[in-house]
Length: 226
Image 1 (tube, helix red, strand yellow):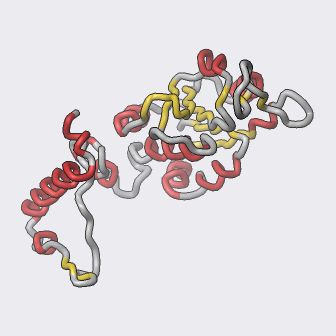
Image 2 (cartoon, one colour):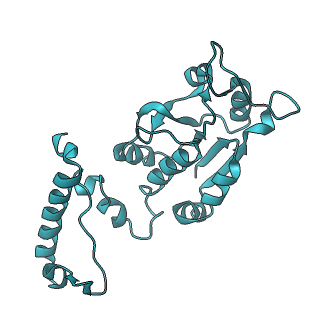
Image 3 (cartoon, rainbow, N blue to C red):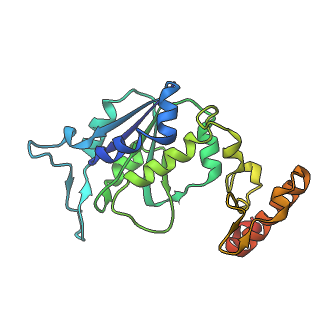
């Protein structure tokens, strides 16, 4: 099975997340997850891994030498993913495509203002973004992307149909997932749609398709134009 490594200055974030959910399930099936402390490959005894940008500007930039050294300490041949607001937008099809292989992956969790472009140009295979917004570091984006891939790997979810029924999944034909209901049958005066309690699976499937289409038209009409 493959090994997924996360290079970060805050590996505790990675370690906490990989102990639960789909990560735990995948580990039980033989996958390996490793959080790498970038400061172990610092350029000096003070643990420095960043410096001010040439040309001026706010913030600090991760230096290339620690990143290269951390990468060199990992198994060779891994595909390197770097999460960045400047990257291409990650989508469900990306997750499905990555799940088809069993190659090792390395996730680079950026911090500060970003990382040296020379490292990106030479070592990164896929620079991706989770959306048009900025967060404080790359740990959460890396974990979100890894989670989206793991869900598509057969056997990781208890019921693999859960993945195919998700919003954006191929089984949903690019639509948002239909509305979900559970007990009680009546909540604050609102009842569960009768068709869902009818036991008529054909009618239920038709209702779900129509409800998914209506929800997509209301919340994400851009998806219907693709």
